[in-house]
Length: 216
Length: 216
Ligand SMILES: [Cu+]
Image (cartoon, rainbow over all chains, first blue to last red):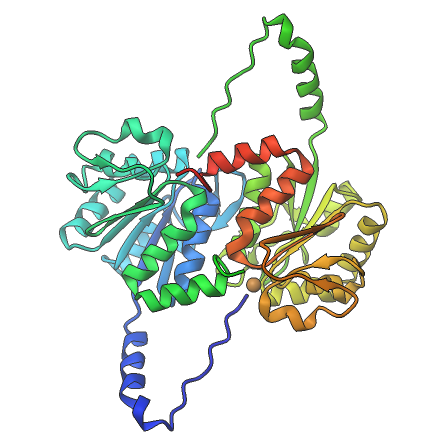
């Protein structure tokens, strides 16, 4: 569903400063980089990208190994917006770097030096670093987020070392700039948490309502 | 996450007839046709395809206008498995025909004579016909499912004529072979309902657990 946004009245003097502020915010829309590798979990990828775009976040879906179509874990083929190399050449830092799960996809992200360097740079600058399902194992592989509370897909728990505090029983765990979630079935709430962090609670509520996550 | 299935013991005589039955069932796995057109809602499409494949259903994601990549409602590009024409040439009837939403995508499905003919044939043979979000409007356009209880994305309610009984307050509405659901945020439950109808409750519970829709 395309959301139809009612235009704000421009003749209401009470609202005018608010309107100016909103325009300023929309010009500075936040950016997110979602990195996909062969074997990525397609619904985790697409739910996250779609939801953030609904919230007005500028999302780049970048292919780890280039801009060719990527065969995902359940044989859905996604076409990246561009290669990760091009995405980083155009913009070295994003407001959020997001890693979708899928065992094979996460493994490829874990083995990539480019991803390692990127995560360390984003950690250093306090930008949001997010991962869902098996993808938090890439944090361990690249040694980022040590000391943070994180969660992941239950069967990958054993791969999360004692450098981290492992959380169970929560759909999404937020610790500072690190956001983690459990699996495809928690992806709606992973998306909503990222929207709240990159925009605000109001926008997250609006996307939740537009998608009919609750209130059907 | 790829699910690791424990192989059944072949040495247990008590289980052998059950094993034979399971093998027979897996050979006759059900088929589903998901039709995507430009402007389809990408998460509704991908969640449904992915979930049904997790359940062992043989899913064909067919492009309404050919096998070229399809630009969806939030600028995610999906590559169809084949064109709708090829999918129907290979197999004229599927156990389920599924229409994802998205206003533009649903509009294209509503205007397609091929889709109209297909829906009428499947209605005639009592096969499952499913639609989510804006896509139930294609039932109205093609005159199928008259007299059925259906639901849809709230803002499309006015397009559902009095030939149907409109249901609100349910994530998924099942009336005979017609399955409808409300929006991207109800897609998990749309998928689970289809799995239950095409396989069984046990398989649906297994996919729900594997995805961690509940019990995180
Ligand atoms: Cu929609």
